[in-house]
Image (tube, rainbow, N blue to C red; front, side, top):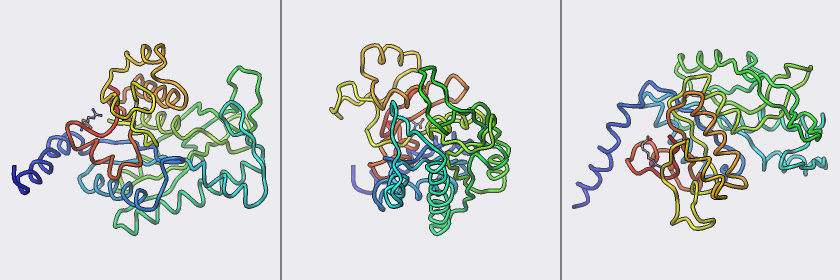
Length: 287
Ligand code: ARG
């Protein structure tokens, strides 16, 4: 095939997917460890603007671990991790809210705007988008102001979508059981929001290729699995470590009616476009 024929084929491969997904909501979790490097950041923003232009309603949910750590370091606040969760006292919560809702959220909104998109920044406090209670994992540990979401009120997000904006949402929640904000996991927040919005897809941008059958061997990427096969992969130890909560989020989303979920590598430029608009995709798709 000559160059033009190849380019035409790639472009036209997108047609059935654009037709299928236009008018639909796609929730994308972007954050923490996938937010690396300016070029990659720009590529994610470009992908999202492209989706908006073809009528796909992208909703961005973000965390921001590294930037929170940086600020805690700058002001000399220590925060400890218990079982992978940041113990969040009041002082740390102030930094979490400031960095997530103030810094990262508004940076994302202005980046999207500068590139020609239209975005509006929200967090779980706005119109009680995410209501949470104090986290109780039943392990006797106190995680401070880490919360678990008990209710999602997506009205404000729908209003932003209907008005033609890309909602950008920081994973800070409104305390339903106390007068406080809570620090909530952004993957879980994205999954719950996807369910509440009746989203077509949930995309988790990570810093791995997807689910790998053999650890550290990218050639063994599992491109597609059914959600009922997840249990087996967990038993076999294929899904373990940091991948486990991500896969569980995907399973929760699918259980709640989201059609397809995708675990993508944020280090691959334009992985969102490749995943959505090609047959083969770029990461792992869970159906
Ligand atoms: N573009 C299609 C979709 O978004 C298929 C993606 C396939 N991806 C994969 N990892 N197998 O639904």
